[in-house]
Image 1: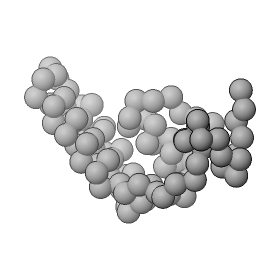
Image 2: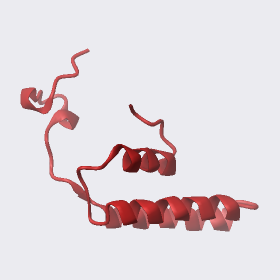
Image 3: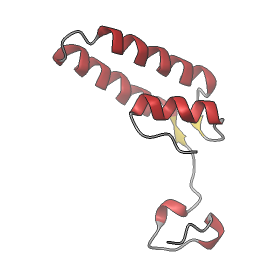
Image 4: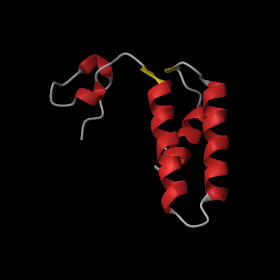
Length: 88
């Protein structure tokens, strides 16, 4: 499996192409909406929602505008908040 860099872009692997950074605001709204649904449907979800809100506020404080040039700490918090495995 070729894990080449962006300079050797393959049209069948668009995720390797260098692209513009995304804005944090739409992502933050989606996370807040998911937290609202979780609060409505889950039983005793408040401790988890407080932790998620704290992580989201820290992410916005660290990198408020665009998702570009993130530090490893911000990347780890993003992965924890979205429930994905952290990449090293």
